[in-house]
Image (cartoon, rainbow, N blue to C red; front, side, top):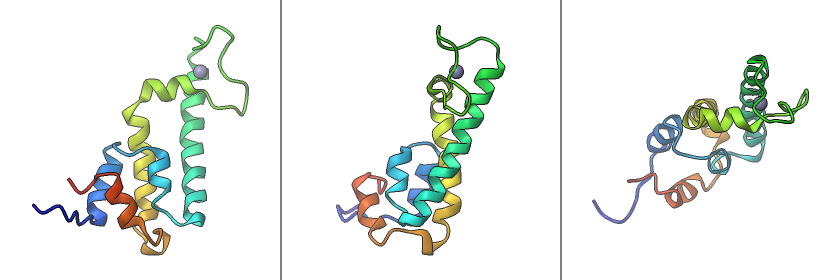
Length: 116
Ligand SMILES: [Zn+2]
């Protein structure tokens, strides 16, 4: 179709829940307030991965897994796309409410080439 990419909310959501957009990219589509909620949700997801990592009793780093309260990056790298998908689902819940969408989300999303 034409070069005028008409990005719909559905396009962005399907990209998000398929783990194709980074946390940073997703945050850019939300209002500053919703962005904080989103980062909090991601923080909980990261913490869960970290706890699972620590519970394996096989520290991912020679120096041991990250200290209490810190987030370990190793399980996130291992989870890869699953981590992005989980964040995407958390993001989609916020984005579903038009009040949480950044005023120029369509333009921003077009820059992510989700219209394809
Ligand atoms: Zn770890």
